[in-house]
Image (cartoon, rainbow, N blue to C red; front, side, top):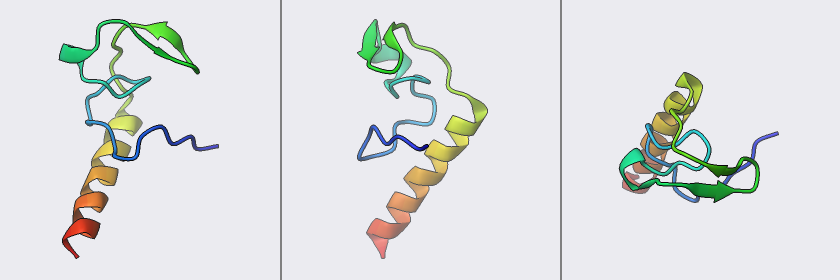
Length: 62
């Protein structure tokens, strides 16, 4: 099951759980993970975020 949390793909290296960048993260809450500190995204998440951002740019330029 795919859960979409953002209308715009988060930065590729944003938090694994919430997408917030490390420099702005602190402690954050998301329902699926609870309170958490920044955690590095998986390689698959980084790739998926990069592809989603590229697709959004390509769609917007068309």
